[in-house]
Length: 281
Ligand code: R5P
Image (cartoon, rainbow, N blue to C red):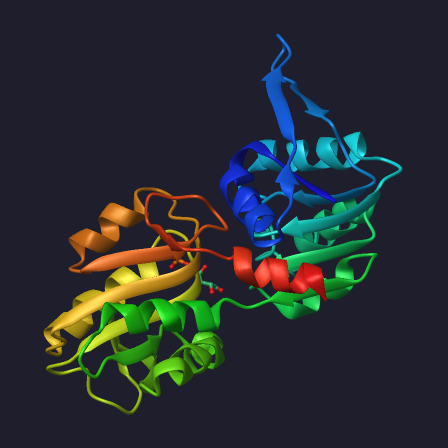
């Protein structure tokens, strides 16, 4: 068995290889003069694990090309971060269900697929092969434990992330709550924990994705006003688009951490162990 990856997922692929005591395949990536992508994988095996996060359109095309390069082999696919997953339904007529389109596209030529904290588990049914999602909630909890914070409050930014926050909080038996949004007036919104007070304690806001950072930046500023001693943000997928990291720091967040499903400067914990466990099942 060998592991092969797209260009943006080389580090996480190597970590999965280490966890599974196997090796990675060297892939040469380049472009044709007209901008089209080219790749050549050297030394494939009969059993292949193909690793690729969909972080943009080029990474999606690389993944499709890589699956084709492995045609005829026993291929398993790992998608650490699956872009396009947030368009998981048709919000208005004429729109695609993008998550379904991507799932179908990536199902061809592979026998099984593993995702990590996919935006919604119902997307797994869009794949035309068996698909399994693994969660890094426990790994975020372990990371927070190592931060050694005094009586932290684990906070989900909304109701949708509340179950995830509870799984994180269970690791340290910490208090857990989610933010409530109250509209004071047309352009004035107040955000505060639904039941618990953030005063005089550190708060860790946890979510699956930080994209623009808009939600968490607003929440952080308000939590500071409510007396939180420190505010941290931890997520699985650090999409961090449009200057999100600086936006969060400017909003008074002490630190922002994410996993290596998207390789960032603030990737402080790895999804590799969870992926390796799922591949070994
Ligand atoms: C939404 O469904 C996700 O769980 C995140 O809450 C969302 O993607 C965060 O977006 P942003 O960072 O742009 O506020």
